[in-house]
Length: 369
Image (tube, rainbow, N blue to C red; front, side, top):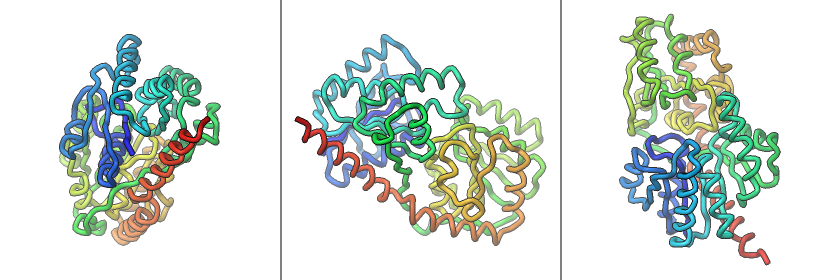
């Protein structure tokens, strides 16, 4: 099978980029032919190069709406489709999803759109949310199928007027790691905590920093860069937490960092179905996440971790203290989290479900009169 993946951003590596990279790499390992289109170049294209994945960077493909450049992008996508002649086009992220669907429609090319959290989900600024809800409603029918990475997002799409028969939920999955990279949640003095997230509006580092301001015997590592990094550093310094909080910047050795950690946190304003939570569970860590989007679907409340209300400093502090003060509980939750990952969120499970959709769409396209 020849598969063309299209995703908007290449300047960062988030859950959607990891998803595309790993799908592409595994497809190649199974003997399929793969090409990736992405906007400009950056950390993501560096990772594609490192893994010998063929890609084309489209300089006019950008996250914001620019009518002239968007039209140029549409034409370039059509040209690449004609040249590569894929069996399936797999679209990821809102902008690439809309332009890619249009290009495929004009060429009678089957395509699948994966929504890694709708751009009109709760927590997104109102103006942006209204625009993308309108666009997704109008362009939904152009995709052969739509994959949502959480049941929350599937229900959100249906509530927005999309056809429930065209939308399927396939939770993200992550490749496994060696036993040597499994964490030891029992360790203390201090208890090591980590949040892996881009420092931007989507994430809520502020609530996390406030929550730990009265907790001793902990060390918090913040992995990631972004436009709000300086603001977060200022908050840390103003609360006298500079000795407790370490900024690691962008890192690719996440599995090695998690292996030395006891508690994982992902405190957010909105989410799709975050891969970092799965990475933490894979390492055998208890997790604390915000109850936004499909984040809660990754864990079993009170067994593999805790889900807290968005922006709730008091509850977050309480849950952190519970885990910090109970090493045995951390160990039990970590073991349960690892088992939950093995049973539900391995990459192979996700890959097989996704490829079944690809094959179904391709068969239906060939059977059309």
